[in-house]
Image (cartoon, rainbow, N blue to C red; front, side, top):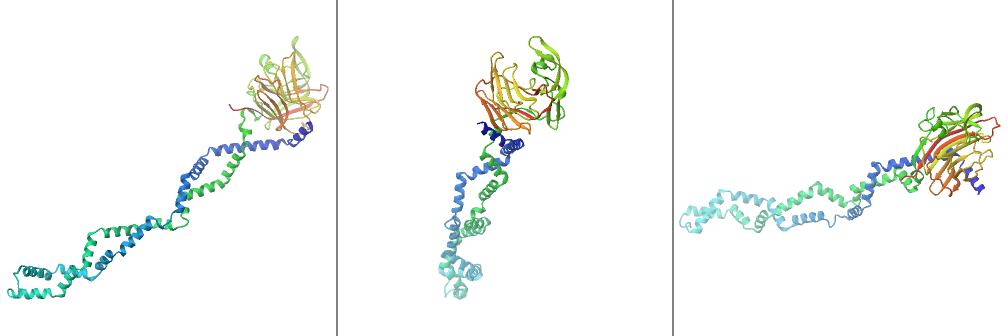
Length: 469
C-alpha cells in the first residue's frame, strides 16, 4: 500500500500541472455557465425544440410531399383551359372577333333597318300592300331583298348569335377573366414554381431554421458547450462553495483575515507567547508578503518573549529562535468542508512546518500537514480531552517535500476525514470525528534547538469551501 501511494504521489508531484488543470476546469465551468445563461443558447434551444417537434416534422413532410399535379392550382389551370375550349366560349370568341357582329350592330342602328321594320309592321297589319302605297311597297321589297337586311336577320336568328347572347348574359366571361388574372398573378406563379420544384423544402423558412440549427450545432462555441455538458466533470467545482480565500496580494498581511499569534494570546494578552515545548517565539517581523506569496521565516536569533507555564502562568524568557504564525482565529471558523493551501517548505530536519486547525479549546486539533525531521509527513488529528487524548496520525513518505509547492487538502464531513496531497488521497479516518467549528493556523517552529536555522514556509494561497446547502 505504501509503495502504491508513493507511486501515485510521484505521478501527482507536478503541482503546477495539477493546479493548471484545476484552473482550466474552473475557467471551463465559468465559460460553461456564462454560455448556458446566454441568449444565444436560449435561442438555440428554442430552435431545437421547434425542429424536433412533431409539428415541424409533419410540416416538412407535407411540403416535401406536395405536388403540382392534382393540386388546386392545377385544377384552376385545367378549368381555364376547359372553359376556353368549350363550344359556348369558342362560338362567343368567333362572333366577338368576327366581322358579322360589327355589321350586325351597324345595321341595328341604321335608318334602313328602322324603315324596313316600320314597313314590315304596316305589311303585317294590312295597311301596306302592292295595290295601295305602291312606292312604299317597292321600297319595302327593295329593303327586304337587300344584302344588308338579309345579313342582319340571318345573323340575328342564327344559333351562334343566340349562343353569343347567352354567354354575354352569363358569368362565363367573368369567370374566365378571374381565372386568367389569378393564373397571371405573381402569387400563383410563385406557388406553382414552388410545387414544381423538387427541392421546394429548401426554399422554405423551415429549411432556413434547420440549416441555422445545424450550423450552430457545428460551431466551435456550441460544440465546446455540449462537450462540457456531456463530460459533466464540473462536480469538482460545483460540489463546493468558496467560503474563505487568500491569495496574499499586496505587500502586507491582511490584518482583517489574519492574526500573527496564538488566538488566546491575541484575545487576552494582546501579545505573543510560546508554549513550554517551543524553542522559538513567534514574531510578526518574520512574516513577509510579496509577489502573492506569504513567507513565514524561522531564524536563529535572540528574542524576548513569554512562555506559558501551567503552574505559574506567563514567564518572561529569552529565546534563541524566532518564527512565525498566521491564524484566522478572529476572522474565520468553519465546521465541515474542504480546507486547502498551496505550500512550499525547506529545512524540515530542523523546523516543523504545519498547516493545522484548532477549536476554542486545545482539543480537537487537526494537522492537515505537519513535517518531521525524518522526511515523513504526519496528517492526523487529536480528539478527546487533555487527560485522555485520542491520537490518530498517518505517515506519508515517498517525495522530497522541500522541492516544490504542494497542495495540501483536508476534507471534513460528519462521518469522515480525508487528507490529500495534490489530489491524491493519503490518509482517511472514520473515527473520532470532530464536530466543533475550527479555525486555520499556518506556522513554523524549531524542532532541533541545537541547529543553525534559517528556514521558510512559503504559502501561495489558502482556500476553504463548504458544500452548497
